[in-house]
Length: 243
Length: 248
Image 1 (cartoon, each protein chain N blue to C red):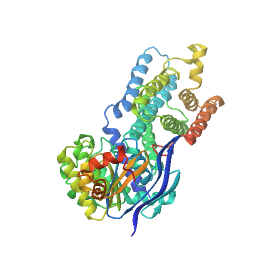
Image 2 (image 1 turned 135 degrees about the vertical axis):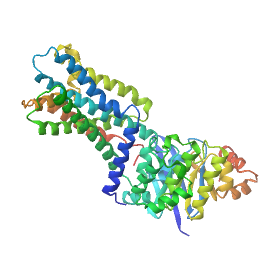
Image 3 (image 1 turned 90 degrees about the horizontal axis):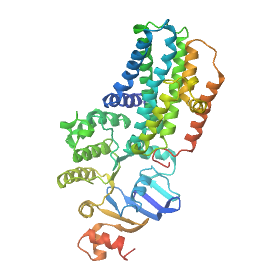
């Protein structure tokens, strides 16, 4: 089996604090994987390492078969990943059609592909709207469209539905599932255990820099004999049922 | 993936588009220094025996436009772009940090050059101030001051993580440039202790160098040396600065 992400025994420290403590996991192609854990537990650091924004102190990280510790590989990895950041990362005063044009130039994407994307994400009515004027749900949908613009093999979504109402959340997930159907690998962080249970093939539960569980939500629930993934989560991060 | 010239051009173009869309940036930066000069020179012209001496104030107003663009606008944007994740998002595309800084620099240069010609036009058309016989060298020297200003701006603003931190610095920096550069208050009339504040102000040295180029007067090495020291300080600081929200 080929793995899109292969993390072996990584350690990351900030000064005296160990944020990730000898963790490892593998993610096969086509899976939707959630990284969950309490605030300050190393989720963002882990995602940023996988996105090639941070380097590890020790251990190895392979993304799309490339060694993420090598600068040459980093440039190639970045051209093949899609990213949706929690902060947004979009110019407030740019119109949607301009942002699409700009990012299409970065990734050498043609007009046909932009047209398909606009249609799939139903962006047509807002193409002449500035990003800052969009509602929270449309902002997330647009950022998701940019993440999928260049047809990446691997997509990182940092809390894609935080702050959205149920309808907007459902729409964002519809589009994410559309990507999954095209055999994209999705790695996301979220605080919604309901979403993990409903949509994810695998979940990595982090606590205090260590992996407490790495399996399908159903398998974790079975193992802990609970009906809801949120119960399993609390037992893993607060209880003694550690692997 | 290699970044093409077309890609850089597109980034530069949209950077400009966004700049001109932002309220309270484009117009005040380009218009206010010109208006101030018209008011100032207009009031002085009534009593002046000769208008020729007014040219010595031109470089300062050009530098002011450059300062407002490069330091005030681009510097604060540099911090807010980091805060809002724009830098991170750009770096996660095939765009490099060099491309991002290049785009900022090109905009700073372009707006500063527009300011340069605006001041020249006002001087020539409104007040009929005789132009320098050294105009090409003056223009080139001005471009060098803009580049140094950009280096100062990106280096100093690189220490800030969010707009809340950077605003007091920007306001103090603006007041420092206004009052401790010889622009509003003649340096000779200042108390000796305050003059030291002027002597470490790079804008003061930029102004002095440009005035001498305008009048084809010999340069004083202390002004060039002061700017060279600032450039070295910036390069050392950049070397040790952690980069743009990444530890790569």
